Length: 472
Image 1 (tube, rainbow, N blue to C red):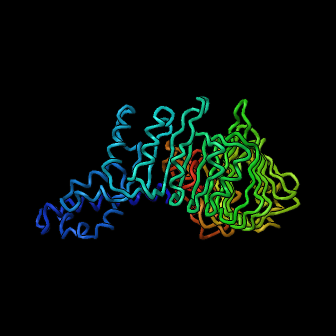
Image 2 (image 1 turned 45 degrees about the vertical axis):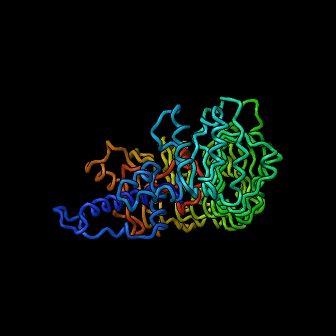
Image 3 (image 1 turned 30 degrees about the vertical axis):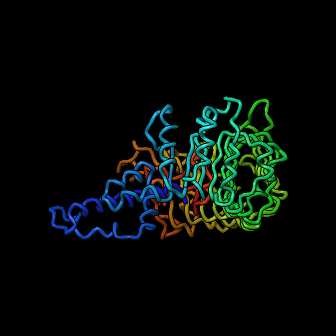
């Protein structure tokens, strides 16, 4: 489940528990504060339900439910354990003892365990003992998180005790670790749905075993991994793939992703690279969501059609399945977007982020044939970051006046421009009164509306219906 959804559930749960505590103190609802009135129905729920509520809370908040009432005193020890070491406000020196005490006192089962990866190389035996604890039997989510700098070597080895969760693990995040061939070759995780590998060293011969050993895998994130050059995807279960490639000196760097056979793949997010990364799509008939970046050393190919950076080479093939596209541009360039719309003629949602204004973006006569001969199907457009330059005004106006089925457009603006004078001026400049789609809604916002590359850093984001939008 996405972190944002979990945070929302945890917030609602905290409110309910606070009200439960009030009602325990005033069970007849006779106090002066009407908001705390009524019986405490939460505490009347079965233990199993209350345990699920507790497991949705952050680690410290879950433990604090013991003070609500005698009814809650022992529930945390038997509730599914959600143990995030980063939520324990303690020093590194105290962390081992705190985590060990929690695990020794908890009766299980385990749901989620997040271990600081920087702790692993210095306390490998302690981490191994944690992973052997009965308190996390039947663990569903395991995260070795927050990697150290990649130039700190050697990478710590992934503990073999990780494999004891092979029959129950559904979500795994492995960061800044070395996956030995001896571990990967025997890897079998039949229930694993989401896998994130970040700054992981793994050999060329072991990479295929990762996919083959996870037959139910749906979301795969490969970030800045090395030790192999090529990854071929043959999976009937994968629905989402995200890749980012970092170039490491004196290492064999990840540089080629081939989608050979992925009949269920829906999302393919090219998150960028510092070297060269070539993505080839051979068979992905359900692919509808993509992210492209402007790095000229990156390539994405569909048969004979090649997108180099954001430049189109060989437009002999169009891909009609693509409906959602996120574009990371150096400059706002309308010509580039129009060429991408030629490649993907069925686009419905477009997310654009650029920090430079770019060319003049004159289009009235230049793209007359495209306007007359192309059916623009865009329904939703998000721009980050709109400053109102002449280039940006011309860019946005193209869609205002020509996207006939547009339903909404969101423009992220700077806080200094969040005033009636700026908004009124740009409603006029963008000719919103003359919009081609009379039902379209236009919104200026100072809130972040499009996720950048570093926000899409985990396989759980890939599982979102919309991995690009921060605003609904």
